[in-house]
Image 1 (cartoon, one colour):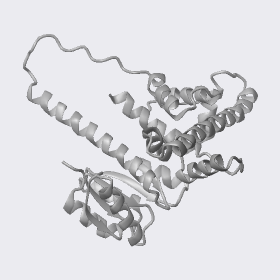
Image 2: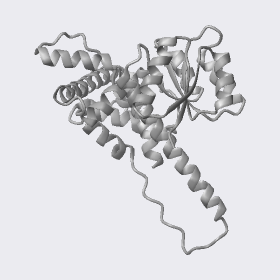
Image 3: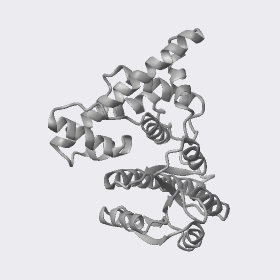
Image 4: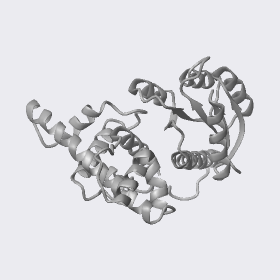
Length: 301
């Protein structure tokens, strides 16, 4: 059964584009759209969609207020936030309100498809787990021999390493820092919706090899440089794959999900023209946030 979507955005062109992407890509069915938060609340409570794409900034009430209102009224839809705003506090509030992912405007077809595919996978996993729980509840009290041995929980390193290998950055020194940061997040509970400031994450990695405050402060800068080099190597690798085979599964999945797709396209153009402009940037926070979500999923399997 296809998943149902609702779209709430005050931009009519954005609503149409998102609907076309969802339905043309076979991701699901759009059962309704709204141009504001208040109208969106009525629509979503009436349709009870599986997934809602919600604009952050709207004239009547913002997306976060709309989501909070819906959840207070018992809405169990999954939410994806859409906005051209990259304010860290707003993004943090959005994740704390319970959104699954954040999609940047202007809307990019490949990014939307990759993000929604990920949301679909998480929805399917959660639905499957709920069915298992329901079945176990019905069988409670019955004995069918000794309880099964639960599978061994995968470590952070076992989950993260294959991802970094697929992106093409595992050989970079920064990959070790990324694994350490993810291990530190897991050690602190790992369920935070949004990540702490980047400097704090760099500090976690720096403190594993340095002791004094002065040494740690110096190492923080080195950690950031290593991360940028590692992610730049991954971006370059994916751009090279995309030039050779635009339909390659690795390129289609990882490029728009972990990187800003505009930067991927610029890198593809650079490689094609055989020149370096020095203008390509990597979004470290986005990369680590997506990796953190992958870690949460991998740990639950």
